[in-house]
Image (cartoon, rainbow, N blue to C red; front, side):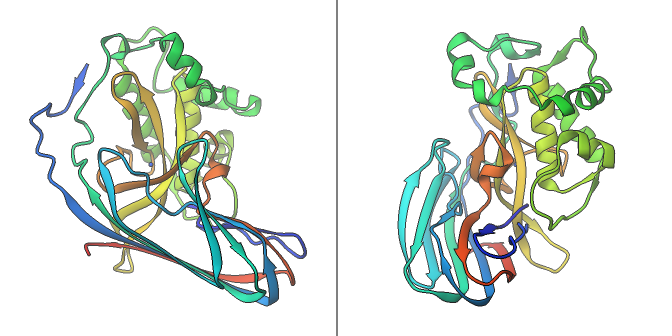
Length: 314
């Protein structure tokens, strides 16, 4: 997942580095667990620079399944921090700087209480159990930005790919169709961690057969929209062991709005529905909007970037 997008006003740009009834029902045991999330981002510049205001998306999204017990944000050089809620109801910290610096250090530490351990425990309204269905008029108006058709250049390739897994007229449950597409991306594509900035288009990912988590999330989102289903992009953290022994990384997946169930997450990188290992930080209709750190600076071009994420029990 992209971890920072930082543009320059003078010099070269810095690249971005880098989720009917189903399940157990009302008697599910909603046990709570606590997780500590540590996210460190360091930039070492080529010389003294003046930082412009930075937009930080680092605080997890709270809801019935996740409460924030502790949230700390340490920034060097000293910054004035202003918190806002954006149009997507994401928590955004705006950091403003007064002094020139040769390094930018951003350390976010959160302790969260997580309750949602049964991702398949949800209800879908009767009219939406089977695909296709139509959103009610009020929901359709609110969901309009998430129902936009894929870009013209993606429609042909995307349509052909979707028809490999569902043909018009086939009787299928809505959740089953989404799970089928999610699994298909996992089974037919090759995952590759990618440090280049930006997100591949759906057609590019289909042509290459290779992508990062953000590329797969975008492909799934566009596929769902091509079927008339409201979908959005999610960035956050994945609590899973890594090859170097650490646990935790930035991650991207997608959510689809299912009447009666709300926004449900699908992770095409793993081929599974998003669950307790997924910790959402930001959602948007476009992938470009949810980079964890976005900003600009005046000064010599170039910088060295170091990023680390750790998820553990406190």
